[in-house]
Length: 79
Length: 79
Image 1 (cartoon, chains in turn green, brown):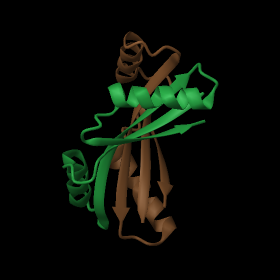
Image 2 (cartoon, one colour; image 1 turned 180 degrees about the horizontal axis):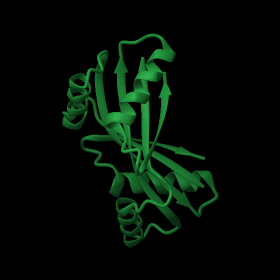
Image 3 (cartoon, one colour; image 1 turned 90 degrees about the vertical axis):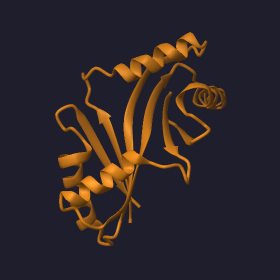
């Protein structure tokens, strides 16, 4: 089973990488970008075939390792 | 218009971050993760309302700034 995980900064947390991208795009002549945010994306191949168990497992991985839940949100899709 | 961009390493390119996550998960007792890959995720708010123009614009941004097309693939979703 393939798990796709998105980790993004919570609202209100400063995103210097996103700001840098915004400024770089504007300096390169790309107008009309009102905001840019950078997050992380993970793909995990899992041996587990039970969706519910897999979801529970991945939530634990996100909380304990993949996301910093103080400043980041995570979302999980299973395929 | 919101653009969601995923940037992932091309097949065959070494992914040390993904390997580190694999090993860390296994050391923490999470079994059954056959492979982990890390990519990047971007969200851009665009003033453009024409989907076709927006797509063309974002492709140019990806090629010139956001992705390193020598080693990375990018995919774009518009919302």
